Image (cartoon, rainbow, N blue to C red; front, top):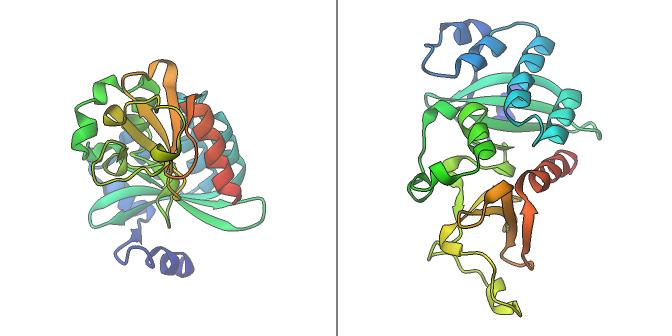
Length: 234
């Protein structure tokens, strides 16, 4: 535990892991009831199985490979607290034997992205299901990347402060509207899986990058599922 906390505190000095007794004493409105019921258990295997059932219920089809990987490689799942905010900490041992920490934030914390909030009701239902019922983002703890970012960190592609140099290199006009596009996934190196709210039926998305030619009309979840698993193995 001390080694884990030393690592986690390199990125946030106030982080701590809650014990079972602390979880049981949390008010019902602080974390989702399903979190509390799943993680208030001494048996790690039971905690993992119960929590992955939350994933399966909400995005079992969309993130089938991610869920399968977690089912095989998760070795612990806990609640951590930072400055009175709660997240789930996933401890993963990948196929190389490396230990990885992923964070899934608390969906009860609420929306914190003003541009996105105005369009939230137009977000594909499956994406809302994840953010509202599973996690407010799920990502590699150290870099907050290689997964769904928390809503407050979703990138508004139309932000005037962001320069997309790739646009000058394209031979054709871009096929998305940057002013209605948001990057929900980032690989941490300037590439995103983005939803354009003027064309997001059936989870239609775009792979958008600061350096690479965009890929249009990709399936949001298929791309995401593949990239998350790649992150686990990198």
